[in-house]
Amino acid sequence: MRTVTVVGASLAGLHAARALRSQGFEGHLRIVGAEHHLPYDRPPLTKGYLTGAVTAEHLALTDAQDEAELQPEWLLGARATALDLGERSVVLADGRRLRSDGVVLATGAAAVPLRGTQFLGVHTLRTLEDAASLRAELREGQARVVVVGAGFIGAEVASSCASLGHRVTVVEAGAHPLASQLGEEIGALCAGLHADHGVTLVSGVGVAELHGKDGAGSSAGQRVSWVELTDGRQLPADIVVVGIGARPATAWLLDSGLPLSDGVVCDAGGVTEVPQVVAVGDVARSAGRREEHWTHAMAQPAVAVRNLLAGTTVAGYETPPYFWSDQYGARIQFAGRRHAGDTVRLVEGSPSDRSFAAVYEHEGVRTAAVAMNRPRPFAHLRRELGRPAGTVPA
Amino acid sequence: MIPVCRIEDLPLGGSVRLDLDPPITVFHADGGLYAVDDTCTHQDASLSDGWLEGCLIECPLHAASFDLRTGEPQCLPARRPLRTHRVSVDDGTVWLTPAEEPAREKGDAA
Ligand SMILES: Cc1cc2nc3c(=O)[nH]c(=O)nc-3n(C[C@H](O)[C@H](O)[C@H](O)COP(=O)(O)OP(=O)(O)OC[C@H]3O[C@@H](n4cnc5c(N)ncnc54)[C@H](O)[C@@H]3O)c2cc1C
Ligand code: FES
Image 1: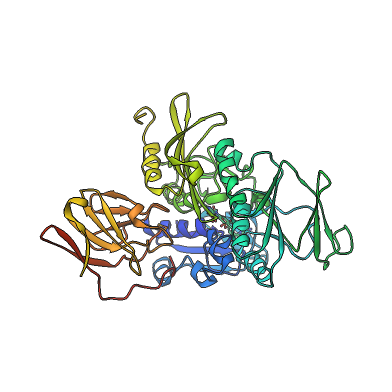
Image 2: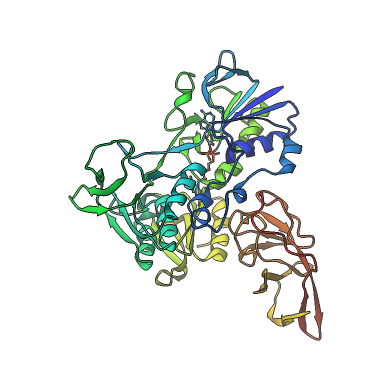
């Protein structure tokens, strides 16, 4: 391979580039990114960056060593609009066609907006610009903040806003916040953190409509004023943050012929139908699953790149999923693949102290582990998950 | 020199975290006692909560691993070494001599 183009200049794209070089690729390495920034770290955007503990400079993922080792051609502020598989070219918005022997798809995911949210003061949170504009508004004085969605992004934003002294309400359409990720019991425990910190959680109710100062409608330039819930309740709001999930950024691949299904369809090794095209990070649907976690986006590209350079799948990414979330001073960690209906068994600590480690079990077999403020036993449990089933001590 | 603990209170596999600025942790690993900065050079995690194996300490947050003898990171996401500090034992007491070099500013490019 003489030329590899990485599309998407974030965590997974950068780690694909690093893996290409560390695995001996000596050809031309291009990294195309729609954002104008060099790769930066997203997790602090909801946490330290919003509260002011971390500045934008601290988010950089690359350093001088990368420039020297990767020797990349950065094409930043450049959006890919198509992938021409016949010609094996990545087509950019300005018409440039980048012929490539190998292509790494690393376009990640984009935040799902709320319908008709033209109002000023309504935010989603995925990029540095998103976070910067929210942060600027949060600095203008005490505000009534309504967070839509009590998932991890919503919960972390609510926590950061509360710590800055704002009055925060979180609205969650589902009856059990975080249930799909953590199960009902543990999800409810984590959702309990909101009340501990003076944040109101309204669950089981959706958002019907947003209203501006001059009434409903989506008149651009008008500021949001209140949120109407499906049960008729009205929540006054100076700022609305929408955290209702992310969708894989695959629109540009629609005409490529590559199979897409909530992500780029690929095998366990990140390889698509075309062996010269691999998918990494949040955009990849590997062996039927798509992960939206930092550690996966950092570690999985090395496997995909190995397969790309081999020209066929020689390895799969087998590491169980892992993620963490920092909210209200608590660190939540989860690893593994739980199933609906798994039983939860406390291993250490106490939920009421907001400090515990627990495991999920399915027919006596451990499927996943979770902890709040218990990193040590969690590390132990996480390692045991990596072992083949049956060797896990009960 | 700062007294850490009695040697019998630091068994193999154990660690003692000292709340200095920045915090330092003394580990009893295979091959002896080692002291390093407690905060991972990647982001915000306490290595005293990490996983100790041989002379390597693995960060509890994103699993970067450091060699306790040199402070050098063994894998991503950490790229910068930990400061190492001198440990000695005198008459059953463990002592720490913090390094003179200043701690690097936290949170630089990772
Ligand atoms: C606010 C926030 C907080 C998070 N916190 C945590 C956490 O605490 N713990 C955890 O485990 N995970 C967390 N995550 C998840 C983690 O950050 C993601 O899994 C990770 O960023 C995925 O990396 P990626 O490179 O696959 O995709 P992304 O980071 O989404 O990057 C994709 C890049 O591709 C670019 N792109 C898209 N389309 C095109 C195109 N057509 N042409 C060119 N470029 C394009 C995008 O602009 C973007 O820069 C968080 C995510 C967010 C947004
Ligand atoms: S904080 Fe230690 S590896 Fe990230």
